Image (cartoon, rainbow, N blue to C red; front, side, top):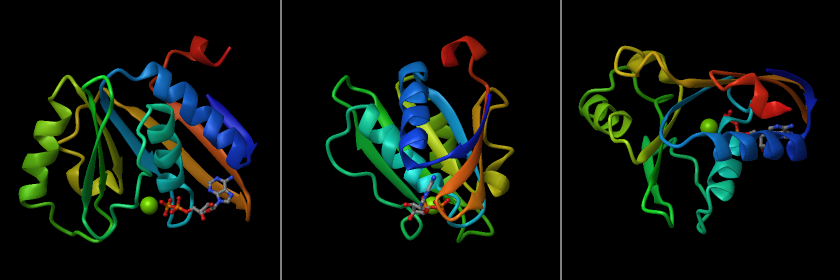
Amino acid sequence: MKFNSVNLEKLDQIAKVVAGQIESGVIELIGDVGAGKTTFTKSLGKHLGISEEVQSPSFTISRVYDLSDGRVLAHYDFYRLTDAGVMADELYDATHDPSTITVVEWADIVDGVLPEDRVIVKITSTAEDLRDVEVLGLNEEVWL
Ligand code: ADP
Ligand code: MG
C-alpha cells in the first residue's frame, strides 16, 4: 500500500495499523537520514503499548522494550556499522524468536540474516513535514 503526503498524524495511524497486524517477525524500515524511520518506530512502540518512549538506537545499535503481553520489541539501527559482527548473531536470535517483533533501520549489512518474509516500510521525504510511505508485506485488506 502506498500513501502520499503523509504527515506525522497519518504516519502514526499507519504505525497503529502495523502494530495491530504484526504478531512477531521483522519490520525493515527503508529511508534516508531524517525520513522518519525512528519516528515510525516510536509510534509503533506506543501502539504496542510500550509505556517508555522508544529512543533512537543509533549509538547503541540495539534497544529492547518489553510489551505488557510478554512480547518484546527489538529495535536495531545499523547506520554506524560496516560489519554487523556479533550483532548479527543477536539479530538472528531476535528474528527467530516467536515473541519478538524486530524493527531494523539500515538493514543492508544484515540482509542475509533477515528472513525473506518481512514487512517493509519505505519512507521518502517529499517536503519538510510530508512523506511518501509504502508498506509491503501486509494483507492489503488491513488498510480498508
Ligand atoms: P530517521 O530515523 O529516518 O533518520 P527520524 O525519525 O529520526 O528519521 O527523524 C525524522 C524527523 O522528521 C523527526 O524530527 C520528525 O518529527 C520529522 N518529521 C516531520 N514530519 C514528518 C513526517 N510526516 N513523517 C516522519 N517524520 C516527520
Ligand atoms: Mg533513525
